Image (cartoon, rainbow, N blue to C red; front, side, top):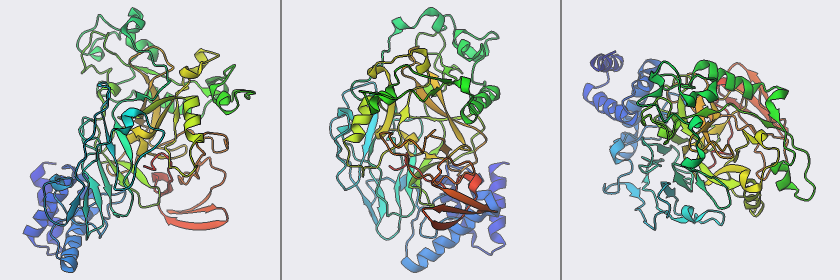
Length: 511
């Protein structure tokens, strides 16, 4: 549908309510800018977002005589009445005067490493922490727009230019503490982790130095496709091949006994009891994607370089309405198999992770760590510096806010080999398991064992709302769109669709 036709239909929908043309035009312009010119949230439910925004603006003008406002496009198309419309360009401006209170940037030294890019966010409270690496302690405060009369907080770009696209943060209530962490585009070693990256370690058979241009355009796949059975994992459109994706989903949701390997001396058990560790409980062997890299002859636009090119999806961090804390939504439709983002954090050893969290008071808010154990079966005994984890509590990217959902999440994590054939370290990429609609919250299954009471970070009480929830301490009763979950003999009722992730609880999105 052409743009003019869409505009005409929007005005026709409001004309039936006798809404003034000029006022509707102003609201529509601001909505389009806020939604990044994505018409779908506006057109949903017969232009309900546009009509609600108009009446919200009129109501707020009558009560408070305000002219600017921000509308949150949340998980439903019904927009909160507390919010006002505001031009997106002004959302994080430090030069505008008026009712907004802007926190001026406070610059300190930049991280010493030139290989990683990061920015730290903090609020007016103390954000110091004893467990962060030196690069995490370099504080650079992010401008935040706060309306003293209206209840919202917004950051126009939490990445501060480190990603290919801006990722905004919106708190529609204005009552929540902003997340305190260093935004990092790339994983960074905390201290003892052994990550050996060198061109000399990449043999000729592990790269495609003879290629040029786009490897996916040639009729015979190059050496980099050998990992995925001689076919590239990606299509020419940049999504995962459906056969490969479905195989990864099946292995994660319904693993068989032969999908597991067992360490002779398991690093996880060793970190719990070094003197007398228990037997290994098993590690799931995962399918890998191997991307072309610097020793390959193709260029950066090669179709087999998806994850290393970074985030291209329009995402937003938002404060959820169901008590989950922070979450992440997509602002545009995402086809099945789309790369959303990589899980980025500090690269720590399993021992460092255990020690870091055992020294805490137990009241800190953590993200749930990721163990890089997808290929631990290739070596029966691993040194501590080779048993690696990713911890995004202090340093990480947008993935740290993505909420957990048991079994039927709309994202799946897949290991990706890029810089090194040594699979002690790899990238963990998140792809969509199905088509995801604009404004839908993104979720992934952390693979948590809710019965593991010895994990350095205790498993949270899961409220994902899935019929297949693994947390035995939570019970759900589904009656149509009503979800009743029972916990500790208390009954709470939520009006939500349990299959769309509307009832969820996260630890990783704690901010």
